[in-house]
Length: 372
Ligand code: SF4
Image 1 (cartoon, rainbow, N blue to C red):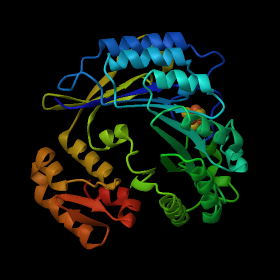
Image 2 (cartoon, helix red, strand yellow; image 1 turned 90 degrees about the horizontal axis):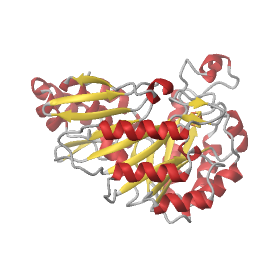
Image 3 (spheres, helix red, strand yellow; image 1 turned 30 degrees about the horizontal axis):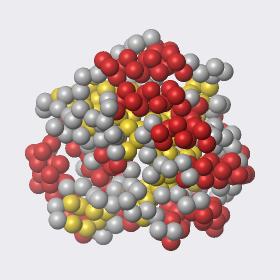
């Protein structure tokens, strides 16, 4: 029996951030009860084979789960846990939504980790990103999360807005660290073409940072967070010892997970078959019970995905094990590619694993491309 995790998507927000291409809707009245009912129904109808009965971790993301009343989240968590104590339950939240009572109720319900969408510690950048909060509100909610009794508090940051300098970003990261988070996820701003930002990206003045400038910003984030005791363990993820995300590490290592909610994806094993479950991203159709699509994943595609995810982590990946299990015809070829990557100084061997250097992690997607 192997472990599995659960991801729940809550696809509602107050307003739309101009860069966002997640599945989320801006509605006047959120149909919380109807949506909760659809989730509970989806969960009760799910048959997951070959896994433990209780989930390893539960992650409630969005969208904006903090717009959901605590009592509903409590009911959902209890149904997913099935009476067991889940070792990591994470809830994402945005500054300005949550109060002390919301935190208290969720911690009592078993939430052990809060992930706060701070995004910037500079009011001009927050405005540019179209966020609804300011730095003061962000600081207040992180402090509240820290005193809630939850085991870990994570902060999300977006860098790479036009004109951002390494010095400016370092100052923001320092302010983040003053709030004492256990974990930071720092994401490069990505611009999807079908977003309001994507439609005006070409005309921005100053322009978006180029690849070299982005790399410098990434290095600045890593260096400032390391000074504060948060080590990079994945391209965008940094943690104090003992506070890495169980949920994400399970996902990166190819573990099974169930995705519940509109737009959610899951990955399940059914005997020798590997299955991707894809829920409708149309919220109305989802609430009306449209079933998830079931796609069989080719072993080679799964192997490549594992290599790609592994090269983004400080744990690295055993190319030998992945190719032996999933792409036996390519064992020799992939060993040669791995040796090549090591010889070029982008990684080192640790036992059977290939572990990226800092520079290799930065080039992870390019390096992974050699296995395609
Ligand atoms: S709050 Fe998050 S999910 Fe909602 S629109 Fe903004 S970026 Fe997207």
